[in-house]
Image 1 (cartoon, rainbow, N blue to C red):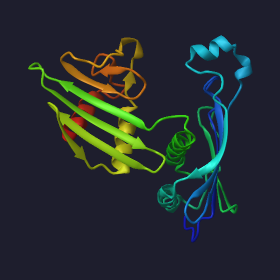
Image 2: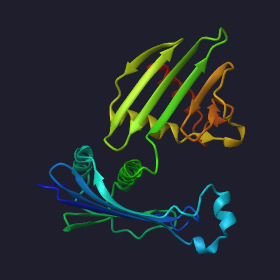
Image 3: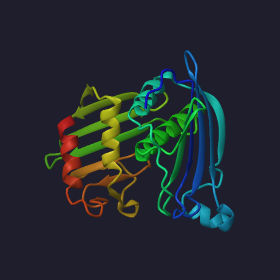
Image 4: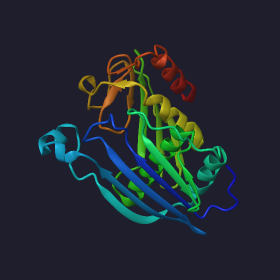
Length: 255
């Protein structure tokens, strides 16, 4: 799709019918592109929660106050990737009826071009990133931090740390081996690909540990307050037996 000048983008999103409360939600994101910033309006509303008790909502890890309406400025750094995705999006929109397991997503460009993009999954991921950018800018969440830690039998330790600042799409990465730190250069796309690979894994919170590990093994922290050990509390997802090996090799390449 070719757009000579991008002045406005609106994204409407709703989770699939099959997703129950308290997880089901709707998002409306409107971006107005100014000279030095992106004027932003963001709304997220969790749906059908009146079907649950307060206790049931809390049991799923929610507070019950997740709805948010925010208006402010996002960094101009998001304009280029948005334009790139528009360029990769077909001018022909999807006209098929939604299945029960499909999310609803509709984009509107410059208040003229409107529809459901064929590459919806990529747009959904962009929306996730922009949502995180809003939460960081608003102060609801801190920048994302990931740590991989490897402890050998001789007690030597190696770590890889990754910090993603969604506010301005900046990546800070470093490795530390036996106390010696070295910065690493990662592009946003490379870091994003790594995260997408990581989060398809099976993270078992009940078997994870809160204290930073000091015993022999390979561990990962994903910012939720837990450390997951490879093959014990982090396991291969169904249908992907190579996940753990592939993920370890990715981290080894950075170390």
